[in-house]
Each structure stands twice: as C-alpha cells, then as structure tokens.
Length: 181
Image (tube, rainbow, N blue to C red; front, side, top):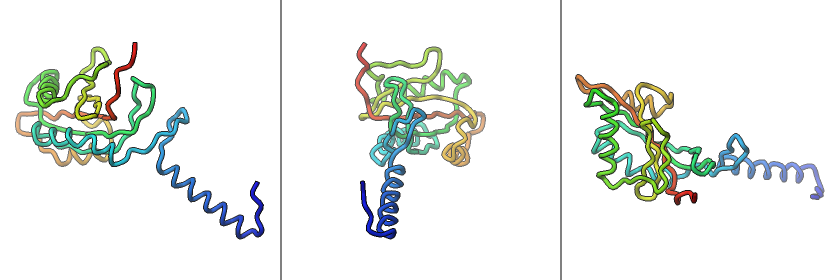
C-alpha cells in the first residue's frame, strides 16, 4: 500500500495514474467480450495501400482507406486492420458479372485465395490474400455503411452515363495461417 505524506502528493499520484490509464485506453479497443485489442496503427493501415492503388488506378473507383478492427470469424478474435471503402461504375447489367470482373482483376494482379478460404455460401463476398494481407471483400449498392468515408467517396465519384454505381468494402488484417482441421 502506498503511504502519502501529504494530500498534494496523493493527488499527484492519482493524476499520474489517471493520465497513464487514459493513454493506455486510447491505445486499445475493448470488444464486447472485454478483450483488449491494440488500436489499428499505421502498419495496419499501410496494409491496404496496394489495394487502394489498384481500385483507383486499374478499376477507376473512388476509394479511401480507414483504420479498422475486424471481427475475424476464422479465429474468433477481433484483430486490428484497415478497410477500403470504394465506389465505381457498373459496366454490365448483372451485378454478379461485375463482381466476377472485379475479382478476376485482383487475381490477375497477384491476389490469391487464402489457404483456408471460408467464404460465406451463396454470397458474393470472398477472402483474398496479397502482400501479407488477408482481405474480405463485400460488394454492395447504395449507401449501406453510413460512414464518413462512404459519404466522401460517393460525393467524389461521378457515374458515367448509362452506368450504375456499385460499391465494395474490403476489410483487411495481417495474413493468417490456415486453420488446422
């Protein structure tokens, strides 16, 4: 037990402890289950930069990177990561065909299926790996996320005449080994 010689020194000790606890709280995220997760730092956000470049330059989409924490169903943990929110123009009438073009473009650029792909059955979402990142891609239309990034990219993007908007959300974490069965 700490003994204080004066109320001022006790107050100083409490203030220092509070300042340290506040800094620790800012550096971590707490999940619903109480798990402490390190906040997503620059190394996690940088993981999304190759994808951002491809979406902007090759696929001609408006896109933005944000820090993220990802509830990884493969591990049951919440992991620090990043997200890329993107919007582009559909050139095909069928959204499924547009998704295939999107995915085949990524595969042609060196992306590959994760060693233990567990995509959700009957959905257009897919998990791909590139340069040390596992990214879960989800296509959608309209405003669904209601995030500032989604609003910004939708304002920045102009749909070409005769085409429709479509969006992708990619949530990326550090590449993980296959889950043993």
